[in-house]
Image 1 (cartoon, rainbow, N blue to C red):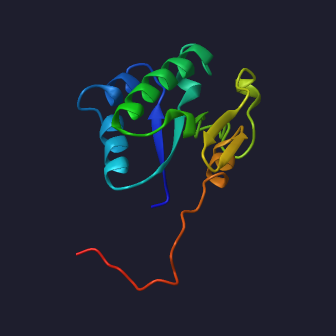
Image 2: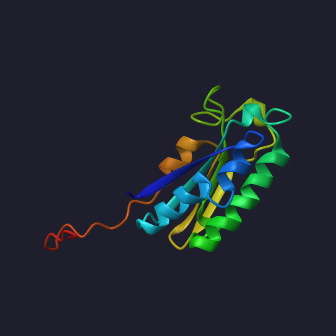
Length: 142
């Protein structure tokens, strides 16, 4: 895969369960890196179920914790877009949400250049397709 989208639940208790020692958030991030997925997007989902709803401090707390973990496994947090979303309401999925006026957008820096945006679809559109040497002989892993 060219990119992985790590969806992290923002709900009270849900994030903590996912980021705990044997949590699925950790496991999926590690699996993506181990399988050679070089680009990562983090969607902080269920922002509508935070206390209070659409909480900026909760998003920043999750961003800090996930950044710390993905850095340990090998990703560069500066090259990862963190997008607060609500799949239930469609917030920040295709269009910028009025519920999260505090969110000024995501920005990534990588050696190929910078990219920024506000929504998950913009983060997906900013993914760089890796070079595929189609002029070379076919190689298959065994």
